[in-house]
Image 1 (spheres, helix red, strand yellow):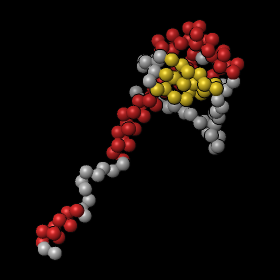
Image 2 (image 1 turned 90 degrees about the vertical axis):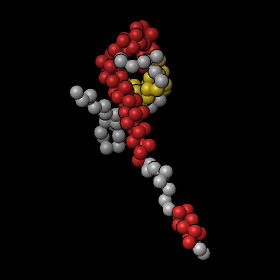
Image 3 (image 1 turned 45 degrees about the vertical axis):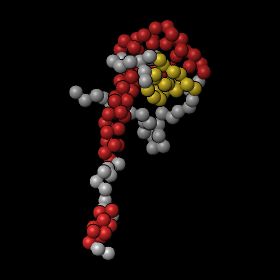
Length: 131
């Protein structure tokens, strides 16, 4: 092999500089997308706990907040009906007034959830906002 061929083979075997570590896109995703959603859900959870009566709150879990729709898991049809009546009776308007983001709809879905994990710790824990 001559010198030009060796140089070509050597260049082809070098690591391409265009390859990025997986940590870079994950950091961007976490910082800009997930953190915003977490903060919105945390704020909604605080408002939810203030406005919803305690007997109903114990049977609900905030599942997600995406594109203005808050999805709430409710563990029984009776509590789902009571919550729907509260929302239709003006509670939805109060949630929209207190929440700083765009809350267009509250979607109630039937389901089961556990309030504690296997270790006995609360499954969902929203930390207070730092000033």
